[in-house]
Image 1 (cartoon, rainbow, N blue to C red):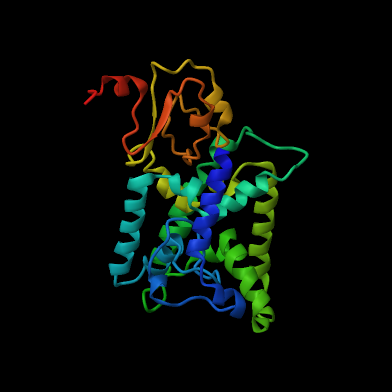
Image 2 (tube, rainbow, N blue to C red):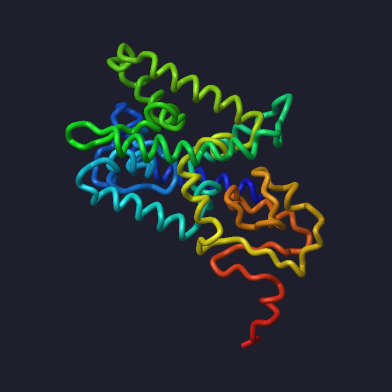
Length: 290
């Protein structure tokens, strides 16, 4: 029931942020004033239905510009959302997170929970953030001082799924212009889909630069998890329930936690709580009655 509720919320958020139905009919993207506003998750600017901009795409587009005003806005937005809720965005708001969740539910001969290189591969998303989102767009700029969205152009499967495929499908003129880069991005999307059948959220774990940013705020965000150590019986149920391979007993606000709530649901003693002022049982008992 908990997962169904979360997926329903993700779906409603996707519909709310991709409500430009005319774009799906005409194959043209929305270019109104709302497109200047960022949405919290990975939602491609080029998606025909997108009403807002992906913060990663927006950051790449403006970070090398000599007029840094909009860059400050994007960075401020990322810091605000991160400080407010951390990777709650990944678990409850990101459209591509929902796609991976649903793909992983499809039966597959071999589901892989973890493997030896897993913890090392999780650091790749930080390298991608540093190189493709920050360094390359900042220093490789044109005469106008504008960088190129290298992550969107070379890596991001979200843009291919939400923007590349629908736009080419709806615009015959674009079909003759596709080449190696389109095939390359298509291959990355295909591999991501295949891996999602076997591994829970491979894009979130190993590639996503937005998740890398939000993960830095998990320990300090306003919304967080709390473990009541006195109530915890160390049964390991929370660790087994976590598909992101986090052990809440060790760190209930670990960088990889997407706030999905499965650990809280699995805990037999109610030792895990969440919220803006998450409190354990001991603190609740100590509160004055009136």
